[in-house]
Length: 275
Ligand code: SAM
Image (cartoon, rainbow, N blue to C red; front, side):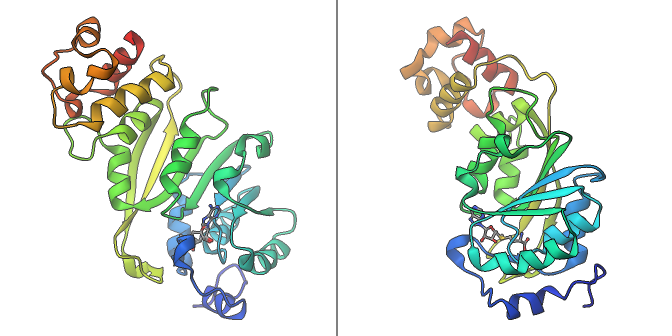
């Protein structure tokens, strides 16, 4: 398929640069530029926006983000083999693509953040995706440096991100995401859309920061959710025993016989604030 941006088709790029996918780096590439545009469009208008991208790989999503008008893309890629392919995109869009070779888990994104609006868009490597999301949700300063997160995950992780109480997928991740953001699943992407295809369906999740999350210490919230969901089938008076048990629950005005998955985010915050 001829590319609308005048750059060569991604299959040619991959072949020319010898970018055979490596499983250890979570490399499942998106080669359909219509699909990468659909992912990028989920982030809303990119005019005047700096986009942080993790793992651009051969650059399919990067090209879509640039074609949709992002002022600049700052990308972190662990695989040095991808850098020459990304340099070609950089030449095509002078001054608009900056690529750093490195591990996104060790990158201080706040330090890289320029003035102006920032959105994060990424088809994340599955082995580090959840940890990166948690890192972006934890900063002491809130609202954070980013305006939105548009991220591809395995569908099961997406379901955990958007889950609310009384949902089988509800857990620590759902509480954290629900506390600080409004999260929604935008659309599913079948395995055959990737090269090579992964075993499971993926989903694009879009998160925007809540302006005024319930005041709560994140460390205490983590402590409460860890204890509660560590034994999710038990009553809370049992699972929360190590951190205060029934006394803590009564202080927070929560029935000790309830189970973790029935508590709303607001109730988890109340528990954390009573710790
Ligand atoms: N964005 C490309 C696409 O949509 O086709 C590639 C996505 S692929 C699922 C994940 C990418 O993340 C790969 O290019 C891989 O090399 C890169 N990667 C893996 N671990 C990384 C890490 N810790 N830090 C930065 N990039 C990483």
